[in-house]
Length: 65
Image (cartoon, rainbow, N blue to C red; front, side, top):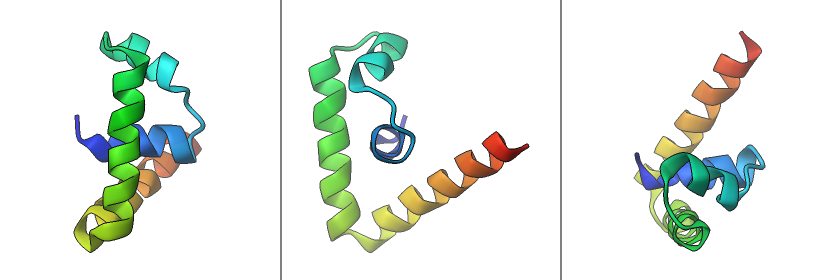
């Protein structure tokens, strides 16, 4: 799973790191670190930011259907 997916889930979709960690079988702290790193990349890397926005748009389209 791409690291930006964790950040989208936490920042845009208000998922808790604990809930994501349970789904992934990982520690909440690890998921939180991944999301933090993804947030940093989103601000520093235009390609990463575009992929982040694209994922958010696709998720929103799925929810609307």
